[in-house]
Image 1 (cartoon, rainbow, N blue to C red):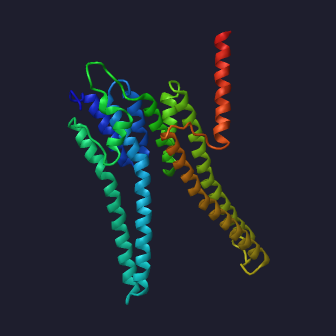
Image 2: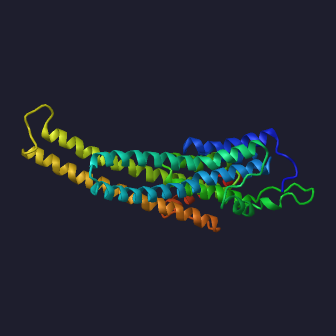
Image 3: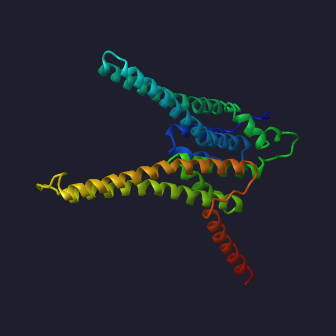
Length: 311
């Protein structure tokens, strides 16, 4: 239980952390900044920032999977309805409008809790997200920080593990998910070697996954432009010519390769979720190859620093 109402500064940081969810990925660095700024100044602001971070990474993952499942089943129902409709054109329009309304509705549901959290924090209330808030409070020892007169801060090891795990989970947020490990590394890497290592390897891992998207796009564009070149721009060549057949073959192969690359990417997303889970369970998780390379690199820098101090 809080003994005193949070100060204006504490409330502002908490409100910003929750409202940053409205940026839909781009604002995910605000909870990390808020936690880093307030971690040994305000347990209230730190806890609310870590909650917001969890909602925008782990909560976003759950929300996105829910949207995909709902979209899949609603699409199957829509296809069945169109096939059996007396007027397919009208049915298609109804399906499009229905899916659009469904998407906006689910997006609105995602924004409801952060807005409520921001209102509660603006009033100085101790907001908790459903399912996650109380568990996170116990994980961080937030419930036992106001016993007696001695100031007790959040559990530092668990703070770091939570931030690191959310960085792993955020791999599903294309591009913007890298803001968590990058910001944590910049702001708190010097304090915690564990957080620095995990943030660096997570950042490298997510960069690798993003590179796969670009590779898939480059492969497809290679096939597309190969078709244009072989068919000829503004010439009489046609798809029936040898050049046109070759161009179509290259486009087909490149398209298949690009699709295969894209289909592999969800496996890396699952890998990132597993890494986050292992970190929360107490492991110093290492990605295959990437983890060892980062560890060796960091060990070399640490040894160099020790040698310089000795000299």
